[in-house]
Amino acid sequence: MPCSCNAPNFAFASGRPHATSGAVTQNHSSLNMSPKNSFSGFVEFTSTFAARPEISHVLFDFDGTISLIREGWPAVMVPMFVEMLPALPGEPEEARRQLCFDDIMRLNGKQTIYQMIQLAERIKERGGTPREPLWYKHEYLRRLDERIRHRVESLRSGARQPDDFLVHGARQLLELLQRRGVALYLASGTDEPFVKQEAEALDVTRYFGRHIYGALDDYKQFSKKMIIERILRENQVPGARLLSFGDGYVEIQNTKEVGGLAVAVASDEANNGSGRVDEWKRNRLLGVGADVVIPDYRDATVLLERIFGR
Ligand SMILES: [Mg+2]
Image 1 (cartoon, rainbow, N blue to C red):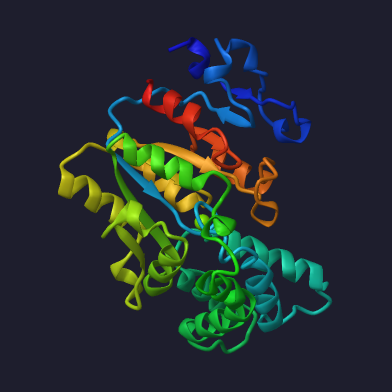
Image 2 (image 1 turned 30 degrees about the vertical axis):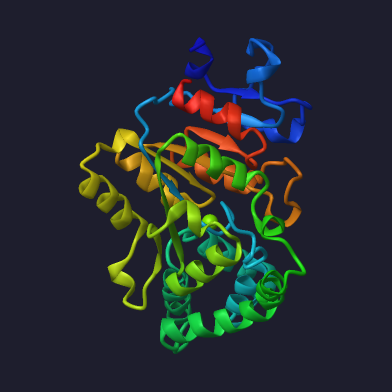
C-alpha cells in the first residue's frame, strides 16, 4: 500500500472546497496509480487509517447509513422538543431550538428513548413536570409516521423502487461485501420491528439474514455496544477484525473502543446522491475517531480495495 494512508488526506474528483474545511487537506488524486483505483468523489482518510486485510465482520447502522425512509426525522423531533420544553424568561425561541437540536444530535445513534429521557430531564430542569419518556417517544413516532408513511406505502405498491430510498451506492457496497465473504450485521437505534419491516421494504434483508437488530421496549436489553460485544464474543474474533459504517457517533465510538475500523458516512440525506459531505456529521464523527469519511458509496469498489488492502 502507498504511504498515503498514514497522513490525513483527501481525494476528490471535482475539488469541492466546502468539503475540506477545518482539517489538513491534500488533494490525493495524483497519488492514485491508475483510473481503476481512483476515487470519483470525496473521501477522507484520517491519520489512524491503515488497510485491514483481516476484516471479517461488518456492522452497519441503518437510518442515514443505508436507509433514507426516515430522512427528515430531525424536522419532526426538534420542533416537538421546542414545543414541549418550557421557555426560560426572555429566552428567544432560537436558543431553545438550538438546545433541543444539540441534545437530540448528541444522542443520535442511541435508541430513541434516550432522546426522550433527555427531554424529560430538560423539562424538569426548567421547573416543569414531564410525562414518561415513553409517552414522548410514542408521540414522536406518531408525528414521524405522518411524514414517512407514504414512503413505505409507495414501496409496497411498487410506485417507488427500493433503491430510491437507499443511500447512494449502498446496494453495490453490500453486494461487494457479500462477495468478499464477510459477515454483515445491521444495528439500529430505531425500534426493531420497524427496522425489520423497512429492511424488508428496501430489499436488504437478504444481506443480513438474522443479523438485524433494533431497539427493544426494554431499552436496557439493547445497545450497539452490546451487539458489538456479542459479535466479537460469539465469533471469537478480536475487535481489530470489525469494520463499521455509520452516520451517528455511537456506532463509530463503540467500534473504535474495541479497536475496529470505522467509516463515517456523513450522508447528505436530504439530497441523496449529491456527493456532498454533511459537515455537521463529519465533524462529529471525526471527533470520536472515525478512520474514513465518505458522503455515500459511489466509490464502493475502490474504497473496499483500500480498506482490505486488495
Ligand atoms: Mg443513523
